[in-house]
Length: 191
Ligand SMILES: [Fe+2]
Image 1: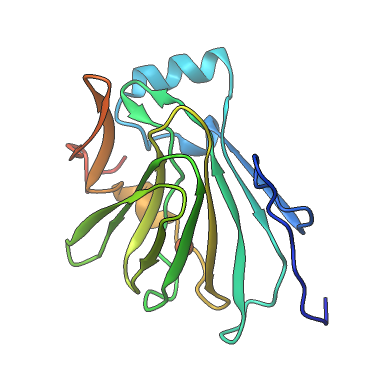
Image 2: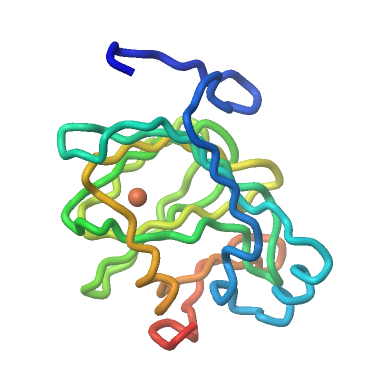
């Protein structure tokens, strides 16, 4: 596309009325990421459930561009752990990202290679700035879809491998019917 464009994010689903790419991640894509591996295998054997979807616009992967789209994490849990995205560092570590929550409830769980971590609540109307160097993962703690708009630099790239190897330092699990952020006992080990 060589002219500026708009797109509509219509209630209640917020699926853009036009997009170039639709990514669907099922349980299979999350192997090794959930703490309760027995619950994961049992769920996978029953149904390779759809966990989250991303609608993207194709723009050149260049520093002057802003890549953007919509992320939808569906509700559910593997064991006690809520449905979530794979999570990633940016390949160019010193690049940031903005998220704007359109629907649902959850957390953005974040951490740096230096050992800092943070969890930001996501609610409709909340905007979040993910600083450079911070890995990020969306977690849906609600009963419906968690929908966010994201914007990040065109040259950022995605490093999924580091998280696949070491996981996130913190997990978001249900305790007594409520979300709680707990240490990941397997962090740093081969997942
Ligand atoms: Fe990102």
